[in-house]
Length: 126
Image (cartoon, rainbow, N blue to C red):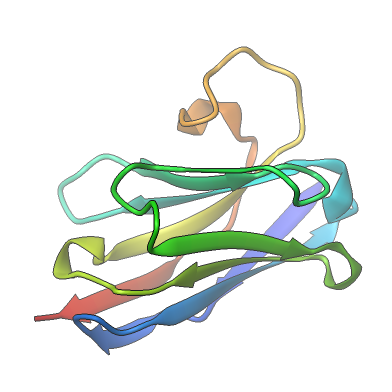
């Protein structure tokens, strides 16, 4: 079992920055991949970023590449999402998710992930 709790969301102006945290408990976080997703009102949940177990490999959605950075501190059982140069279109609820089992869904597919946090709201004002 894995429990995930996101924090760090808020309201920020265009061009600003936020750092989201995903605190994990239960199964040790170093044993699974972690992804960040987001969901804006009226839209489907979309992939944002993913990091491997050791933190040495990351992948990003094109829409956030160069602006967002995913990282992890396994000693603290925490995964982060640093978001810079924020835009109004980044406004969404952000979720972290754990990929703890082997399945064949693509990494950007929410179905690949079997544990989810409750989400944290990010609002970027223009």
